[in-house]
Each structure stands twice: as C-alpha cells, then as structure tokens.
Length: 228
Ligand SMILES: [Zn+2]
Image 1 (cartoon, helix red, strand yellow):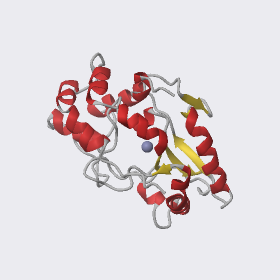
Image 2 (cartoon, rainbow, N blue to C red):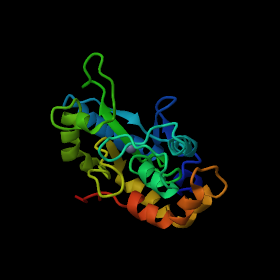
Image 3 (cartoon, protein in one colour):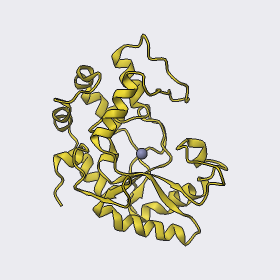
Image 4 (cartoon, rainbow, N blue to C red):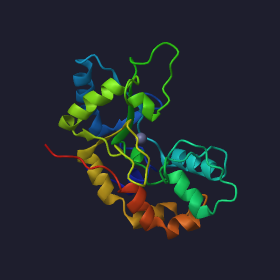
C-alpha cells in the first residue's frame, strides 16, 4: 500500500471504509478492529466507535471556529479560556491542547479512533468524551481496563495515555500502530506546511512559523507502542 499525501493530511478519504455515513476507518484497520471487537464481545463488552476518520475540512472548521471564539476553548483543567486579549501564539497553544492542527490529526489517517462502550450507558445517559467516563466507576472504565490489557495483542494502543505537556490525555483514543506508524513517518514539516499554504487557516502565519515546534510538542509527543 502506498500512502498518498492527501491521505496523510485528511484531504482524501480514498483509504477509508465507511461503516455508516459518518463513521469510517482505514480499509486495512477493519479486520484487526473487528477482531478486537469480537474479543471484547466475548467479555460482554460492546466496543464501539465514537469518532473515526475526520477530514481536513472538518478539522479546519473546528480550528477556525475556536480561533474566532465561536467554539469555546478549555484549558487542561477543563476551564473555559477567555481568548480576548490573548496573543495569536497563545490562542494557537490553547487550541492545540484539545484539537489537532488541520492536516496533523491522527484521525485523518483512519488508523485512529475514539471508542466507547455503547451498552455501558444507562438510560438517558449520553456519551460526553470526558475523562471521568473512562476512569474509576465511570461507564467505560471496564472496557478501558480490558483494552489496556488486551488491545496491544491486536496492534492497538493508547497514544494519548497521559498529559505530556502537549495534548491533554485522551483515554478514549486508540491507534492501530502497524499502520499509524507509517503515516506518522510521512508527516513532515514540508508536507504539513505545503498542505496549509493555500488554506484559509486562522493564525496561519504564526502556525507556519512554529510548525516544527508544533510537530514536536503536539504531534509526536505521544505514548509509544510496546512490542510483544
Ligand atoms: Zn481521538
């Protein structure tokens, strides 16, 4: 399989297998994912996808709305940040704690997804994608515990297992390492800056200037897959 530039940056979805209109993952991840789901099912756990592939345009829309204050930005303690009076560079950092730069999201690749257990929510409860749901006595604590023991056997791991000074911990985010690793290697400074060159990205000048440190602090600053 060759990885096209447009697939790395989310501008193409040719590599995506769609389970429904809004949910898809990479063709090559379908089989390992199904195996993982089947193994979970045997333990009475209903592994489900909250969010799989996300396109460049979708990520761009999130970014621009956060940058202009149409969507709220929260800090690492979940407190809403007032962006009025902040320098552009500060707004960029604030967004990056929870949202990827368009073109640099692992969700573009189809190798990464946000999971939950759709049978663990009680009546009237809806998925929030918040850390408490995945910890202690939260509805997805059990499936999280099971995945931590077993996901690796199927090639999956948790790249955002803890806060490392870049992206906040995302206990719901799983990555299929054998393929994600290949995408990761292709995501270079050049690929990313070329991809953003002709795009109406808010804060673009600052972003391009800082692109190397953004990649280091927010994209490659992640947990590692432990082989065998
Ligand atoms: Zn995610």
